[in-house]
Amino acid sequence: FFRIVFGAFNKHIIVSCDAAKSFNEIYGYTERTEVVENYIDEVGILEKAKFESDIAVNKNRLNVVTLGRFCYEKGFDRIILALNKLKEDNVKTDKIKVYILGYGKEQVKLNKQIEEYNLKDNIEVITMSELDNNPYAFMKNCDLYIMPSRSESFGMVRIEALILGLPVLTTNVANTDKMVNKEMGIVVDNTDE
Image 1 (cartoon, helix red, strand yellow):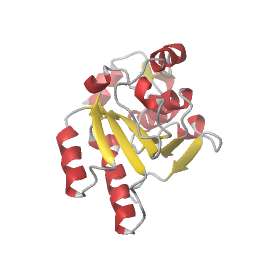
Image 2 (cartoon, one colour):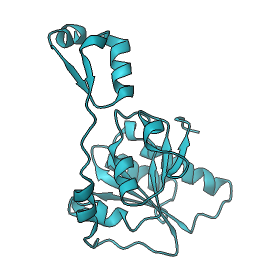
Image 3 (tube, helix red, strand yellow):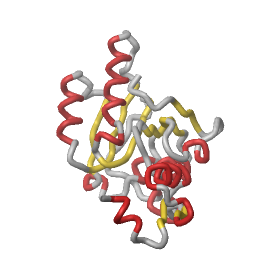
Image 4 (cartoon, helix red, strand yellow):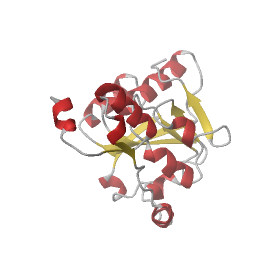
């Protein structure tokens, strides 16, 4: 079905080289594929970051933030499982606070998982409406950005975090090698381990 639909177009605009490569491997339209990366408004991000967030962070903790749609692909459950593993291994987690910012259908599921593992003191889910749709005013107060995604076409929020001066811990998904180097953060394997 999609081969027929995509075949009707003169040009296929894709947001990243990695996404274009995957698209072309599946559909074979190399000659009609063009990469146009998403626009990132650095000035706008920095302007929004000047506002003060109504939600405070405890500066005596490592404040970790992640942002995106609450869905399986974004991998937020991986953070919950990783923090639970640290607790099971008797690693002190009382100095770690993770903020999962975003919106979406899996918010209830994430909160249940946090409660199930008794991590309410360590992980907080915050919706975009609670942030007045401005995550940057909050993110700037954190110490680390994590992108635990299972898949991404571009991963814009990694760049947004870097603009805010946050180091990034990211799974190896689309365009990671073009966005994050050793001075900016750490890239880990894209697994649930």
